[in-house]
Amino acid sequence: MERAEEREKYVSRVVLLPHAASSVTSARRRLCSDLRACGVGPAKVDDAAIVLSELLSNALRHAAPLPEPFPPGCVQVAWEVENPSAAGGRDGWLEVAVRDGGAQTLPRLARPSLSALGGRGLGIVEHIAAKWGTEVDDRVTTVWAVLETAVAEPPERGVPASHRSYDQASGGRIPVAPPQQAART
Image (cartoon, rainbow, N blue to C red):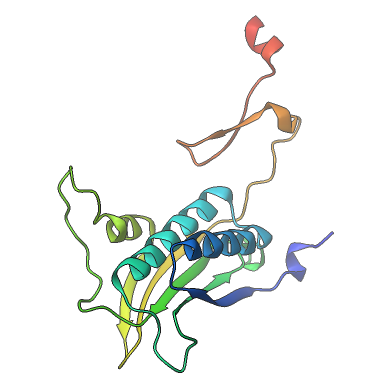
């Protein structure tokens, strides 16, 4: 069994993906797998998946693929996480970045109407992330976001896994009494 002290302090990954909608699912799965392996809590893993999905979806919808010397038809997704299990008892951080060949306009927050079908992505990113921004060099645009991460909570003692449920409102796990006990109380 791996002890927290033995885990790497930083975990990073850079992935080239096709400039295609299917890349969102692939990137999200890889990110979530890395974060879970670092001991990041489920609510923060979900937040990171949403942010990555929004940034990558925007790149695929609005921007061109990366130019040469990158392989044709690709975007780049990268992340670095400060392992919260190795962060000395404090929350860590995660930086997610998506690089593409740029668009005619820079990414910006939109204020869509209630009936609009799109335009909410960067607003969602701004709400979840501690900060986000854009960097542009001569032919590549990078949109990045930084999120705080938290160590996953250990399971409740004395409550079997089959009697736990996920409380979305609190972002954590709460014990649930077995059905026969709940009926008596």
